Length: 301
Image (cartoon, rainbow, N blue to C red):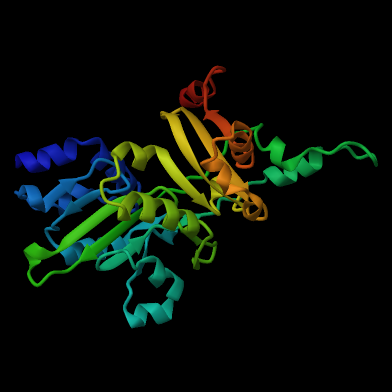
């Protein structure tokens, strides 16, 4: 095995991405699609999972066949497409979402998972009139933890004039922009606003952006994190597998026009303070724990 392959396979970025492929049915192991002895330029692992891995595939056709055969549960794992007229007619929104993808694109749609939690909360309400009711939004912070993973695999397979000029990019979008319903129909979601503003413009199109910015700073334009009704930005001051501390500032769609932006450069402290107040600065601390041994109990079972 070449040193280039060894370095790539040992990297955290590769293993984070490859773990998603190993969860597919049948499993896909990315290293099986690498050249046996790639040159440095034929296998490049970037610094984060958003930029991903660039490589010259050993067999581009075999890679595409496996991507199209991959399943998540009973549904196809990827939605294939391109900007070609035939694909545009089939699903124009999906084709538009692939305009920044080189070659043939494959997006992993996320899937809504339904639970009976809403029914259980409804049954728990007091039966008497004029009695207080449970707040649906606030009550969501309690009970069994359920976190939807909106990150999504994105693959681009580009063809050159020769097989050695074929290039594949594999990365993980921080916010998947396509959703598949229970009938297998795919639609582009409002997350496309966040994806365009944060992942494409800020983190991909602007040259020389530091890696820390790519992994800790986000622009929010109708994003799920802000309930699809605010515009703003956030910075992750601390980020780990179990804890995240985020500072954010945003304004509602109906109030952004009323902000006096002169306060941003004003020498008047009161005007500057009022300016930032209108952006609703917030510190969010989110995390998970196992103080009561819930995970350990499940493992013992």
